[in-house]
Image (cartoon, rainbow, N blue to C red; front, side):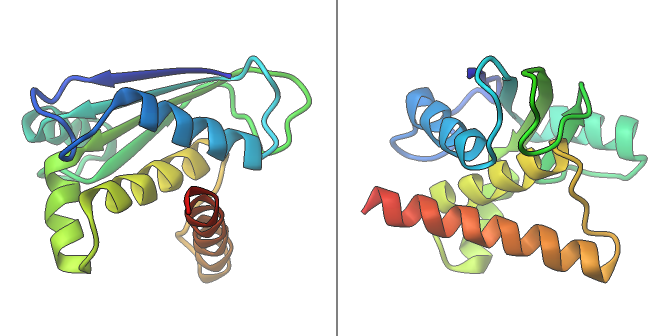
Length: 151
């Protein structure tokens, strides 16, 4: 897998963050989702100003959000041929506030957001109740598998 991680936020997304960990986590997700070798994914961490601009431009909504996904090759889990999944953009400062509210670490929140973003790249959505249940169920399954592996 070809995974590019960029930190454009001006600060580490969480204490002790290393881009290698983000790459390892993304590799885990793509492997669990049966993506073919050679598939490409880009992950960017941005500040609130940048995320606000993206959120306004692409979603026509004000203020920063936690994660945005920009699919490229309309891939689905288990695709036969490699391709470019697209970009997942995370605002770590928004993630940090959400982590406090949720009572878990910023690292856990960012892993949740990355999982959520990758699932969006693969065509998952949560607008309808059935879609929501399917997407969030798969998200919980992937995060649980990661935690079990990391023990």
